[in-house]
Each structure stands twice: as structure tokens, then as C-alpha cells.
Length: 167
Image 1 (tube, helix red, strand yellow):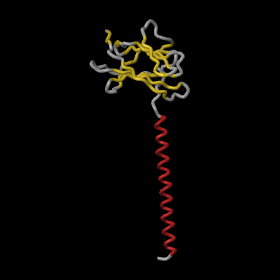
Image 2 (cartoon, rainbow, N blue to C red):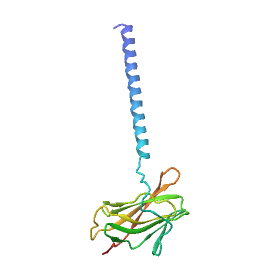
Image 3 (cartoon, rainbow, N blue to C red):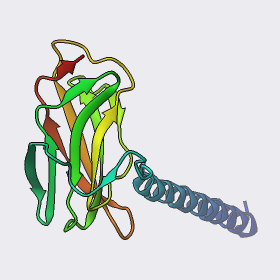
Image 4 (cartoon, rainbow, N blue to C red):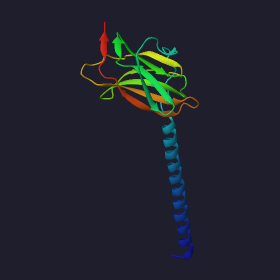
């Protein structure tokens, strides 16, 4: 083999390695971009049409301060009439977050979901998507969202205890 053939092979190997690195760089960029998009693509509920302005009248509430500068309350124990679970979840006017609520059982099966509850609003009830089962523990997950850009500000889990059935 002469030096001309060796030079051609060396250039070919360098060219293949160069194209391979470009492809690898492209794949890495796509993976990173996809990860960034998925991180920001969480579910943001719409405003809850059943939310009311103010605080619930004549209802005994259990107040929680789950985060600094966040004050919420709910009726404990909750009770059910037909397909509605009365929670009176309250987002006080001094809060700088909107909130939403999801009702789960101990196995993380979803039973109800609210829309967004703005500051100075309360949600009287969650509409149950299916019947609750006796002997199961139920939890409300209250999620907090930044009012300016709707990014997640975290959430808390509230064990709601026994649920009274009213006729």
C-alpha cells in the first residue's frame, strides 16, 4: 500500500468519526430537550366552576398552614350527599397561590378532582367520579400553584378520616 491509500483511509476514518460525533451530539440534544419539555408539562387544572367567593358560612373548619405564607382550611370530618363530598376547602385572600384538590384512596385510585381555587375562594364540595368503598383510607392532595406563571409550588396530603354518609 502506498502512502496515498493510507492518507485516504485516514481521512475516511476521521470523516466517519466526525459524522458519528455530530449524530451523537444531536441525539444528546434531543434527549435533553425532551427531558426539559416533560419537566414543564404538568397538568394545570382550569378554574373550578363550583368555587365561591369568601369563606364558608357557619362551617367549622380545620385550618392548616402547610407552607410559609399559605393558609388553607377544610371541613373535618367531610361528609357525602349523593355524589358530592362536602369539604369546604378554603384558599384565604392573603395567599399568593391558587390551589386544587384531588381525592385518592390508600391505593392512589382517583375519586374526585377540583379545578383551581383562587385566593379568597372556597370549594364547597368535590364531585365524586365513583362510589367510595368502606374500610378504605382516603386522602385529599392539595396542590399549590404560583399565581404568576402557574408553576407548581408543591402539595400536601391530608388524611380525611372516616367519611360520613348523609341521606
